[in-house]
Image (cartoon, rainbow, N blue to C red; front, top):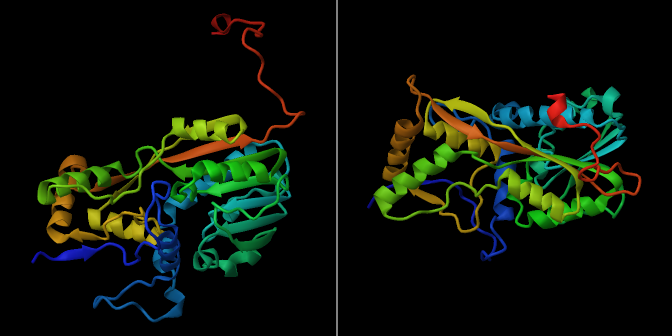
Amino acid sequence: MSSSTRLLQATPTSTPTPYRIFDRGAKEIQRSRAAIRRPVDNSGTAFEDESKRGTLSRQTDYIREFCAQSLSERLLDVDRKFPTVVELGAGAGHLRKHLDVRGTGVEKLIMCDTSEALLNRDKDKDGEYPFEIERRIVDEELLPFESNSLDCVVASGSLHWTNDLPGALIQIQRALKPDGVFIGYMLGGDTLFELRTSLMVAELERQGGLSVHVSPMTDTRDVSSLLSRANFTLQTVDLDEITVYYPGMIEIMQDLQNMGESNAVSNRNTFLHRDTLIAAAATYQALHGTEEGHLPATFAPIFMIGWKPSPEQRKPLERGAASHSLKDVL
């Protein structure tokens, strides 16, 4: 009998349906476990020192920190003050580190997440920031905010795990005041395409079939269409790519687990045969490895900005209304 490696202990909380791509219960468990996981010693035993709680999670904050800084810069580009900002998928609070209070006028940040453990991971640092911080357990698919009540909503990288992304965007738009702004990002595009292709090749070769090990990703065209469907105006959608180099494929998978970004597809296979895992690592190295032996992993956050319509809102000019030719300018 071939040995196997467990990828995720959580099991689906209900039977998958065509409209239920992700197991939201498993994702909350993954994020909570990541927030409290301690490093292990040479024997494989977790350190009992309470100060090491969440250490692995903090070591893998690099993607979220990069994206939080990008979000704060986009928020600063908006020439308006936002006394209260609601942040969805706030996690441990990466956006709060980068908010420019003088530029944005933020007086209160409402951090929302599905995982209480992750939301409170760095709560002891709240006193370092010159604005009030409130925490709420909130599911992005069931927003508790009243219609026309918010000036600004920020989504910090959790929307790619929602089953009803169109519905989530519609709820965000409904909660915003007229001329309110939504700024967010979600992972999409070619995120982890190296890991995805390597696992596919290895499974086809060793097992003669495919299982879902990496979440399906959206692209910029889909995001633009979804923002339009949710009736956002003055949209801006752009994609960035971050390449992180790792010593091996196992380290990539371990970091994803410590980020709380392990696979949470409802019909996922929670086991991966050891020989398939070894074959996937070899395939990864052969297809994507550098001459130095490092393995690149691509993360592609899609950033989006949308405004709720308002009668006072500036509108684009009609076609043919230009008074100068772009040809002359160039």
